[in-house]
Length: 425
Image (tube, rainbow, N blue to C red; front, side, top):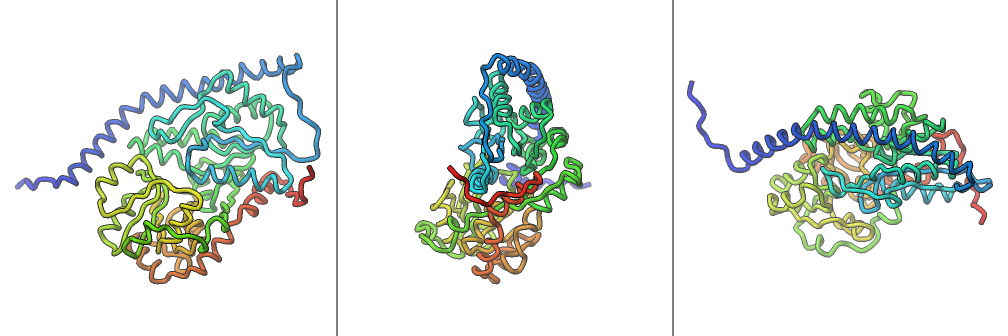
């Protein structure tokens, strides 16, 4: 048998080495992950079981605050997402506070800003609250003193986990949100299916005690039921909203982008492997015009070195991000793991058609042939979206994603009817 002695080209060799290194690191990390998660998880149990009696003792001694009487229903939102992160969960957290207050609810929050937190090892932009007696006592105090009519655990992190344990110990009902496929992310980031499978079991445990599990799309909700992480009677899909005043066709454009060769294919989001950005970056080799990236992530620096023809603009928010949407020609969404894709709605609100794969979330958001193109061939989807572009249809469809409507559905998940009368001071 004649052996193939053709040497590997440098790019392919680099990919083989990277895959091998990722596998070695991933499998080497497995025992560390299990020991770390076991210690952290059991420490949370210990903290809750020891601190709840202490809180009751303080309550008997008159050292804790009492709930003030009032007619407004109370809502407690618990989120592990720090203000420094840029993601759809943080936007939803803020919008729920605004619209719940507008609908007459008294809103309380628990988030990392109140606690000591550390960066996550695999992504330093994500910060986790450090479980401690003080943190646990603070969580117990907030839950008891708030005495909420509706409690929602928005993220499966330390804050959410400790809150879940406390709520179940006290016999209080709660809902959860399931917005991120963390089991898939862990598999992709660490190259280990064992860690991903363990994370899947932990996600199922986290959501097991919830009255309702709120997912941001119908396809995501169906997926979680099929995977067994959510029971069918718990599943409660609610589409996210969009601020069509902030994101619209009217307003300033991005001068730097306006100077680029057209058409402009825009990607907005984390530049990381779990977001499947490589197919979007590879469009620079097959499509005319310019591939433009707004965002950063774990793959950002390497991508800048490798894709010389792609324009990397870093993170943008608010009016700067809105200007980027207005200036582009087509929005590219390569993700296969997102459960909704907030950026797709923002792009459509700005008049941009979306080119994407037929994935969870995408099929709930994009109307194929009307507000974009969905195909297993991303380049073909881009060309179709550009050729059939109808900005008016995109804007009109984006208006159906409303934060007020989303909040009303959120309230309905607790079987309450929203009070639309203005709150009195």
